[in-house]
Length: 262
Image (cartoon, rainbow, N blue to C red; front, side, top):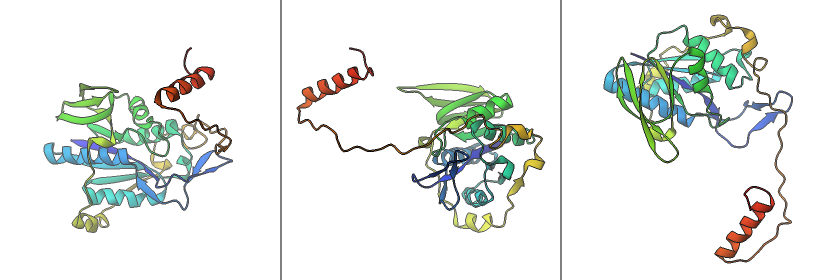
């Protein structure tokens, strides 16, 4: 069986700057990490490989330096790695990103696609579900455990707000994983050595059968109109009240602001 894991290289900082003209994150010169939810998804794929037998391929869309992340995934145990990189892909929102990913995935054989629930730089939780939709595949999001896996189906535990659902889905399908589903393993010493002996498959715009109007910044329907830093004021009222009086005061303020009913 073939498992594709979709991953993203994200900034390792909360001090991000915005390109005021394009409305996109400035990533140059910023240290990066593999998105935590995606790493958990990779760990799930590797465990399925060990338990049931499968080929695991790591797939990412990003700049050329994302190759370093893919080699780390080789060191963890991935069998193949694919980097979708082209200037025409840059500046993409989730819709344009999922278009690009889907265009590549349509060219390969797979039984299961695993993506992290969301990336810590955008927090949209949209790329996995959007990719599934564009591939016409069933999907289950917010997966907290994989209970069964075979050539025909997958059985998972989906996290809800206060409880869980156990769901069965035929293959092929897409699942998105929470970071709590599994603790990613460390890179192996021999794996690190062999990671630099393996090839990372590079795919550019010319390799994908895709309309340039639906990718990259120009193909992104989502635009950032304005960004700003919230001003902090020191002219706040300080009240010394006990617990009950404090609760009543907070409720009064929220009612005055129409956040709760009177």
